[in-house]
Length: 421
Image (tube, rainbow, N blue to C red):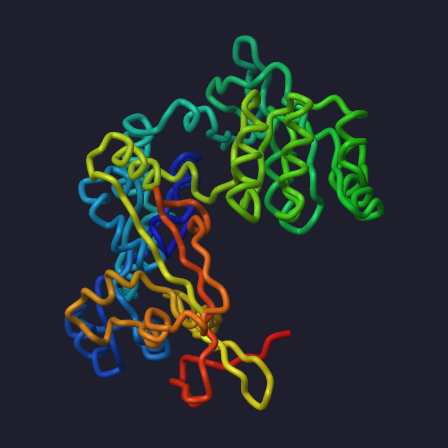
């Protein structure tokens, strides 16, 4: 398994499944094409593929974690961390080193054995029992059932305990997210049984049930909960439907897994928490089981790094052009994306960090327009928890500022005006 970021979920999955993994990192700051020769000299020569990619991609920053804000925040936590010993590492721009590393990973028994030992040490030292139980079998023959359990479908699992009675689950929502990300792991597990699926469209719900081998389908949640024996409800429907679905499940004593965001405002969220007081609940935050996030949570809980508070601005500037409302989008290219750009907010930044920097070039364009906007120009201003819930006390301030005609219509090449609708 090959990855460009330490915090990829696939990296920890590879470690837990005892699969060799290689991480490509970059220690060079390459602000422009002129700096490429310095990298060439330090590496003793850039390979043709690395040189071409670098020429098409500059500027690039040093990275081992994505995004850059996460890199700066968590990089100190990785010093001396056994997690990195369980992964082969190579310099992204060292083309020869990457090729030789991959060859060793694939064909050198000694190198593979060393990595296997490092993976085992890491899991034994830091992985909770649930990680070890979740390891999937890798050989192709079936295993003998452990005492009191059943053999798993995918082969021998080193005595992995399996629940005698699968958890009976109902799925609320049959859209692309539910079918692509929620159903596959449920259907692959011996420990759960998807009994029914429910959605607003009876035909689509029936099709989702038929395609995935689910016994029943419904177009009304209350009907599904009344007619189907369930232990838990997994909610993968649109956010607007979450509060009612959570309440319906909790009234019947069902455990609840709800995708993020829980609700559209704090009041609904607080009410949902109160309604679920007697059942087990979980929100589908990304990277919940990632070891780096787990280490960070432990440090926060134990008070090692004090109280963490973070507020980031996510802002759009808007103006009327020929009578049509436009928003100013910024195009960004992340490491590893050669021909794809992301269209994002005008400003996405932590103002305190940027304004305190001694490098003016690091201050995002238009940040001052957002911070100094007069109240009458602010069309939207709300603080919400950061998407994904990755950080304790992390908040984003979402702002829309409508600028006047004095604001320049000509913008830098990495910005674009786009109409709404």
